[in-house]
Image (cartoon, rainbow, N blue to C red):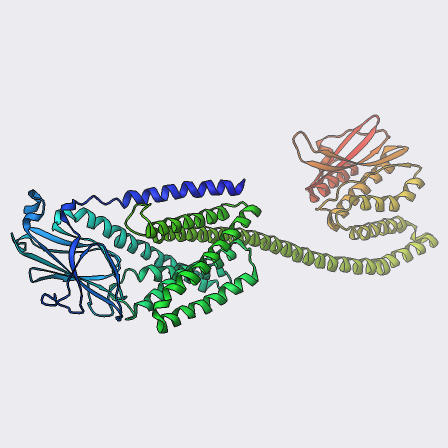
Length: 632
């Protein structure tokens, strides 16, 4: 189904392509009264009209012949006419007349009534092989009423004659025809060749910059030989005197175009047969060399070799390209593959049209269309390459963006890692320093306090300082415990507090109701904050023991907030079932009336040091000290 769709696209594109060219290639009809067909003919190498030479023969144009025993053809045609032989009209009174020569493969020179009207270049080898018509203008006064003689010199670089009819009459009769023919055979050709030269240079530069992308190299090679092939049809001065060598180069470049194009298609579709590729490249060298050798030493055989061996092999390369593209479309029906197959199909149909144009009268037109078809197709191929190049750039930009993003992410990760590593190193150093201080305090000051407390227990004289020593020892242990805090672990701080105070609470006749549960780690909970929390707890428990007359102490943790719309916080509550007391603003001030007032004010002060606050509620059912510590 895909191939049928492509075939339909080929037919539609070919119809549009041929229709446009036929529309442009419409030359107006020329009045047959201005046509010269019945003439005399004489083979002569003279560069001036051979008026007095014998052997003139009557012939009819177009005239075909082959010249024996000569390297080139030099034939004179003579036409005698009266002015009255031409149709009389207002245009016949034009001040400028012209001789219009339509032969496409030879040079010409024209003389009228002994006056030289002009020529297309050399009349001796090397002879310009014109592929366009030649028009020679002259004053209308040069045409006499009677006894006019026109000499037309036909010069071909090959020993063969293919002279078309010529025309004489007012310039206005030939202007449209001549302009149309020159547009098709010169102006349009020149424009296409110029376009191909520009594209070739661009693709060649891209191949030089990226030699790994061989498709650019094969494309540049294809357009180069294509430009040489059709450029040789445009030049007036031939590079070789031997026209058979020119024909050999024409065959060579056209065949190489097919061979190089097959390699381009193999590269762009990534469907390659190494054996066939090597055969094609080997034949390019061997067959091309044979063409040049035959043209140099067996001149007349170059057309036979080119037509029967070289060009059929190029046609096989084209069939191979079609097969590769059909397989590519069957495997992967992309826009590129379809365009390539459609373009090759257009080339094949154009070649078939040119074959009918050359060997039959079945198709209209004034020239071969393959030159324009190949230019169109090569432009499409260039667009495909540029599109692929643009897509590759887009992909590269996307990959670069992704790579930059990943590099940025990895850089951030590395920076974060180094930041964490540096923080860990600092924390480890702090931990080690805290451990050293803890050991020194425990082994030094702690040991001395224990020793003093033991002496005070044994000596009645020291009993007054015993309680002071015990408080000092508890404070030392509290400080040491606060130094062991790590990663904001509040639960560990509370657990340590329970361990230090549980015996004291039991000795006071109270009971612990421990309701501490896991809470999130507090980023602000370092040794300093931990010490403040421990001192608040110590103050609360001390107040319960001394003043509350309670039986139970409840310590709990929970997650809550400090008020409506406030941020979440970790809450630690110390609750008793004692007699309670009156709580007012004066109670929290350091200037309160009793020691409890000083203690409660200290609690509030210590809570602010941690970034939190203390809220105390008291009543007949007991007192609650609520410590609120922010999570952030």
